[in-house]
Amino acid sequence: MPRLSEVIAALESLWPAERAESWDAVGTVVGDPDQEVGRVLFAVDPVQEIVDEAVKLGADLLVTHHPLYLRGTTTVAASTFKGRVVHTLIRNDIALHVAHTNADTADPGVSDALAGALDLRVVRPLVPDATDPEGRRGLGRICALDHPLTVRELAARAARCLPATAQGIRVAGDPEAVVHTVAVSGGSGDSLFEAVRAAGVDAFLTADLRHHPASEFVADRAAHSPLALLDAAHWATEWPWCELAAAQLDEISDRHGWDLRVHVSKTVTDPWTAHAASTATEQPLGAPN
Image (tube, rainbow, N blue to C red; front, side, top):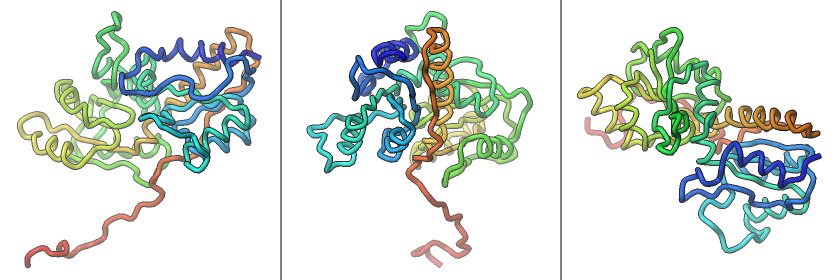
């Protein structure tokens, strides 16, 4: 079996830490470089439920997309929920490694996996990485549909192909508008509106669209193209990367002749657990008669 340091070197070859954003917290959080690794678990969130799954699986390494301590900390006391995660990992000899924005912009990366899950053909990055001479790395992806769909049909495909969540898929725009090209970005994407508009696509699928940026974008469509917005759950747009990343590590393991078993967690760690559709037919409370 390989040592942790060897597996981490393989992961760093896929997602170099220096390609992460300056505000990000990526890399190895917990783990002894000399420990042997026989089983790896990939997941989106380093939460207690996932760590308990890693313990039950007998994993030696947990790889997550989201950082455990993004903004730093002054304590890992077990009286805090993140501290309990650290204690559980160390007590069970499980290492934790994070690939976040360095995986977002990788080739292939998070948005490639999202496009693949939706059977979209990737054309180019939405926001290219200026340091990539081949122009393949970058944030988000511009994609083409092999056969045009309406916005309604594209939303239905996303709801069917992405992991089920309480939110499902929210849509802003004409449900019957025809879509030929789509911009996708795993995770929070409303900071990319200008790039999406400049790309000239018919729809943008991402997550965490806030009211004001989305409202302003929709209101401004009359002066530009009638672009539709599709808002999925953050976790659901990033989970496909876990399968892609696991397959990449499997390939490296085979190439090196390692006895490594790689797993993907199917535990839903999206924080929203239920959804109630609006049924009100009367005016909002406080509205004038």
